[in-house]
Image 1 (cartoon, rainbow, N blue to C red):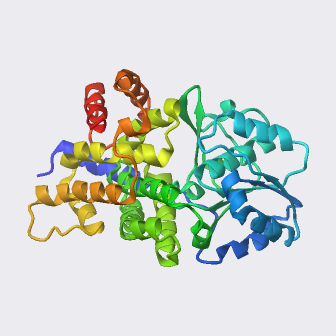
Image 2: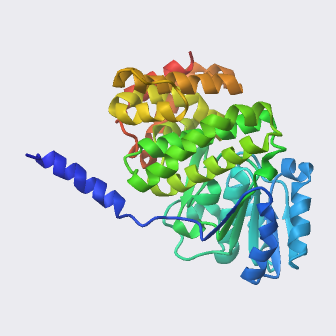
Image 3: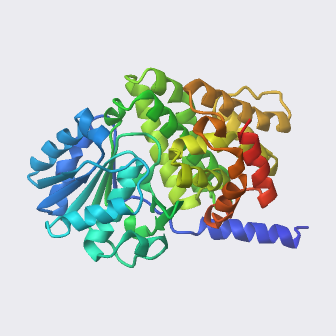
Length: 398
């Protein structure tokens, strides 16, 4: 006979299953997909597009290549190439102020997650005015902004598939959260990631792996999102080492790009958890790159979470290629922990908070910052108190 708690759990699962699925209107994927950009702009009927990118992408020649494609549409193109790696509110505010009177009809975000998030925000601000602070938090945007086309040059944030845009405001990671900042189109061309250097490939790739794992174990996961998440785990774990250390390997880059995108779709519909919650304070005050911050907290939060759902973590162990046949459920689940530790070690990302210059005297501030991330913590499969967070951070100093 089913108990009342069982019916409650099934009802919760049903409610999650009935949530509307959030997705990009148009997505183009594969080597050479950037060639779809002129057609997308022609379909939008815009006269002028603003490319939002950074100096690294500009130096690689990719920004110029995209500008030429846009002008061949034919659409006039303006280029802003000074987006910060971890942007504050002043970045989108400044871009919007600079281009407000230039009759921009579309924003093209080109680069890593910071460029894509900035492009999302600029698209809203050019259409509706105001400053970034006015849009921070959930559902502060009530209608779409300018069309936004996102073109990632790293495989990491999955921002091209999410209704989120992250910025550092008042020393904290804060987010704009709205379905109205979903891009009009996403163009995921793995050839554009070939020039990403090894450290960027490693950090962004681990970011994507965290997304895939956290959405798979999220309390907001559904049978549909789990398919995206698990496939993303398989793709990323199977290709990240080659993508980092043999960057010209297009097959590995293609798997990473697809894995990152699938994980982004899962984020949009299931949400991430405590790895992100504990990573945010590292980026807020110390400007630790988001992927590095996630990688630092990943093993320690995973160790905490495994007892909450050993079946899922055993499935994840198999997905990353760990041999689990003949093991107990407990041992199979913890194979996932040793497996991700090996991946992090192999791709050369910092392993300790000491490595990124965070002193142990900051423990209290880190805990307080993480505890504010209730939007993320509510998705985590195991509840964390502040004492639990302190224990996890302390382990991360190794």
